[in-house]
Image (tube, rainbow, N blue to C red; front, side, top):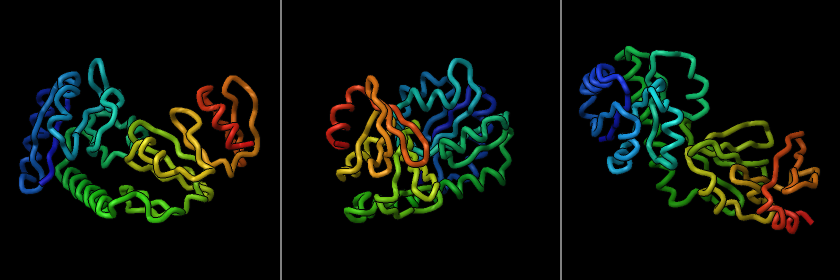
Length: 240
């Protein structure tokens, strides 16, 4: 059974969602309901939920800011809101779903089914014992399934909150719910290097280094990425 937490500043809204989730009591148990983001920040780690039903518009701290303040987390997110203007941001964060208030029961059923598929996918990837398939390949668990890619096809990996975005040579972007730090230990080949807090790059696709405090790397797709001064010396050693 999955564990769920609800965060909604409106008491009526949180109670209504809690009531609707009781229809799924054999699949999902609500272990916490919060109406204040600050209190949820302090308590959520101890509850170890599998999913957070998160309101977007809240006074003082919206749902996206809440996730940023939370730092690292290992649960899935289902956004709930009365506004439809945040759909793109929710997709960018690879949320399980985005439910409009008042939450429709059929849409809630769809969201929970999607949640189970994603949790099952993550569990299957953990059964592989490692994110590595071989020294030359990586498995990337996503909501759609597990991608298996050649490391040589990675141009760079960018941090996005607690997610990592893989940019590949075929212009594909793959969003994975793991932090950049987790992949830094797996991309130890001579061509990979973390050049700032948010980006790991494949030096095979660098076409130019522009001097500066830390400098700037230009890639063959025209993208430029700044190098932190602390990483400059190691980068130059690898480049030259």
